[in-house]
Image 1 (cartoon, rainbow, N blue to C red):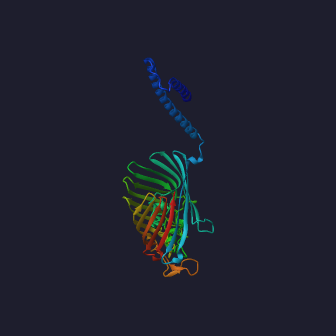
Image 2: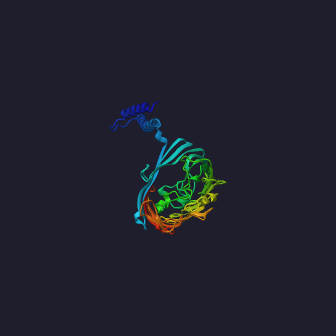
Image 3: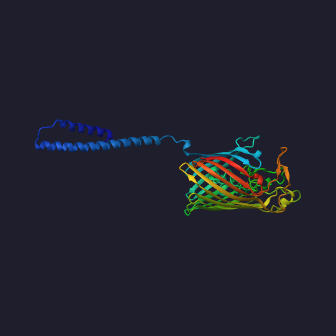
Length: 457
């Protein structure tokens, strides 16, 4: 019987019982009548309990019908859409040359992803640098990532498209909330190209032992882009150094922009995170590069090959955060290319390297805020060894830094040691205010004070 009909029948029965009871105290009744009243009273209690239970069932039935009606709504394209992003702006003040102080909305990045099925998804990131991107402005618009993930099993993911290479701490996780300092460290900018991305196929996964792995086949580097001649220094400040794309692999990476795919490269990476607070990892990349154009009547024989390797470690016991990274690279068979460009201020290096040690400590933390001072020591050398040349031939003394009249300075060295002291103040884990001071030992004019604001979501 439908719950509503049964409720009606029970209500009628209760009314009959009530009519049978006289609200005024009755005269003593014969024993058979008293027994009948007792039975009716017990029956009334039973019926009231059944009514209560049926009302609860009726309410549950209504809720179930409402939920079914809600679940029956037409699916929306937004159900499988994923949005994210990050951005950062800064103020930099070279302490020995205040006239070169700058403020900039450095980058704004917007991520779009979509899940086509449980095992197929799409991800992309689009970046705007320096606010305005046009033919007459310094800004750029870039596609930073554009790839598909296929997950055939729980322990394997296949990535195909344009993706970030799995090297170091920052290349895949470079949001401003993920690193200390207003700017990214120099080793993961100049030796490992910052946001280094290639087109290709990547296989990666994790094991139950806490070991993550990645292997892949990708596009590589194009040495035909190398510039041996430079009329002016390519950078005059630490900020220009990071953004000038003059580091060995910065200068020749292709970013899948009409990339020369004559040669494909191979790489592998492994990370261990099986113990709480501990991360250990390493990666290696190798592949033939597009060759430097041969000088007239002097063809360059053999292949020019690029190598890059790195190892990193991080330990975060409680409030302490300790990390270290070493990266090194090599470009082979460049002696003939360098010899064909004698006196160059920018020959191709055969070896380059960098490393850093960093310590941070959270001195104050609540549910919303966190204050973490840090210190970092780092060394980079963009040309530790050369073939076919003794090294860069740099002009001495004061030289013009640009075509603008009256702007002079010394030609910078391509190696340095940098000390950084600073602090990060987090306003929730997604917003950070940063400040630091950087002391350059070799290029002393690069020393600077920085302020920054970053966010990620």
